[in-house]
Image (cartoon, rainbow, N blue to C red; front, side):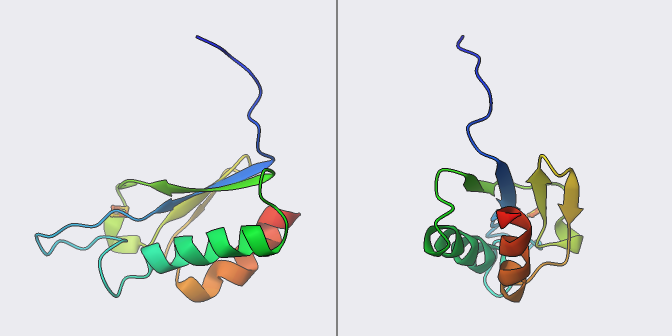
Length: 96
Ligand code: FES
């Protein structure tokens, strides 16, 4: 095992989990998790944050009804009820 410091200043983990069985999921069509994640990834590139900020797709974070959900590291913030339109505000937080 190789241990080293986290290479990113900030990371946002965005739930993009989808289910085909009809249960509510952040990544299901119309829920916005996948679109939010894509908007964040595009914004990180556009703002020159690549290599400093990481946008990571996450599996189910177990609060599906409140989603789309995400959490920020190392901020320690949990975000629920997100929409793709929240990307701009989140990018400001990630760039700080
Ligand atoms: S599917 Fe996103 S929290 Fe469960």
